[in-house]
Length: 538
Image (cartoon, rainbow, N blue to C red; front, top):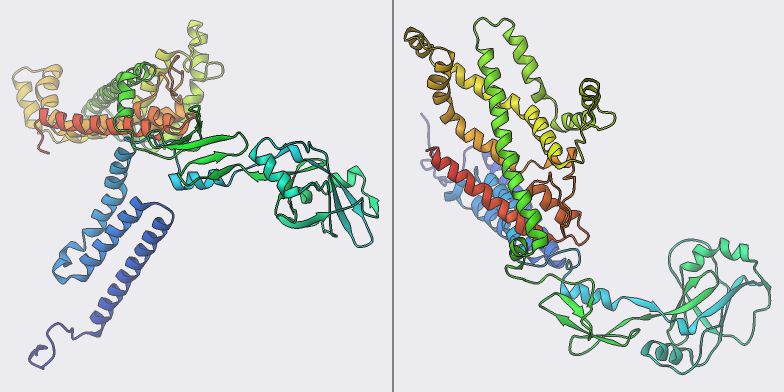
């Protein structure tokens, strides 16, 4: 007779088996470690000035702690990893991309305003009015450095020169104690005024050149704190802070005698003449990136051309692969065909080869001068088409290669769907005098097109964003002339977006994010529209 925990006076929630208790505590310990690791990520992102990522991991950590600490939420524990992964790798990147599209985020506007200000304040410049020639002397105590002023010591006319003159106090000669010019890394050496050259033997030029790397690492400091660095093979010069912070958050340029103010509309410090000082910081620009796509003629023209080609490429690829796959699948169902297994293997074989290998092989075959295709065409017809320089030939080449890569998938789908059609229908058609064309248009196509529609939509969406083919085969070339952004006649919207974000000189991430947002809207809208038109339940 079995007894329960309650009959023995034990609490109901305790297990009779120690292994269950240990596994429960192990699970709790694992969850606690994950939560602590997540909190560490939150703190790290916050300290590095990334509040959005800090908030994301804080929410994930809080959700993890709640789901795995509440007994009533036990059923949600199994689906939580999938939901968290969806939020982390799909929803968050999508929302982040949409957010960037409303900003001027680019390689010029990359840092925060605080980091931009800190970087500008850390910049130095060479004060050329106080240049010192130098000579190394070998003395009994060791090698000493002797500096003698060569620059102009006239009246100070700017802040930098005034600062240097005040620190030098009219001293024109300095020397150091014995210094060791071996090793690497920056070294600070104190210098003091000198009446004349040190007693010792001056080093020859070749010996000075041999010690050049060590001399470049020296930071010479005068008694008043002025720093001198090596600026030539035989010269040292003061290095001064270029920018000075003012109380009104503006910056003063000591070298050029200019006042810099923060422009929060453009995200730059600007001078009185309107010149922008890089780097800048991201600011919200509203719909400016979307307006550029449709209103800027240098962007609108290439965008529309690439937009039309993207739809044509995706649609024609689906059409051609479906035609080739369906015809081959129908032939493989022919009862009088022998060796079907061999033919199936050979026709599906291209699907087993990695796509990038096939693309690179085709790139060599279509080479204008040495490719096998042009060698055959030259031998037969005396022509060598310019596959990579002519826009229409380049587009035709892309369709040919993509049809080769995609037809095995359609072949497999059509073979499976055709085999599921009852043979009785074809026998009844034969009794009524129906031929192959009648069977094709009255039986086969109507029965396979509806289950095939969702897969065709998925194939269209895949080729709509077929970045690998464009990147490996043509790189988007030939270029569209007159475009203000990198744009090619064979670019798809996805490759066009990539080139704007990572190949353009300005790396305009905001504009690229706006185009990426439009791509998402288009693909999602077309998928829903096609599913509704095909009467497929979503």
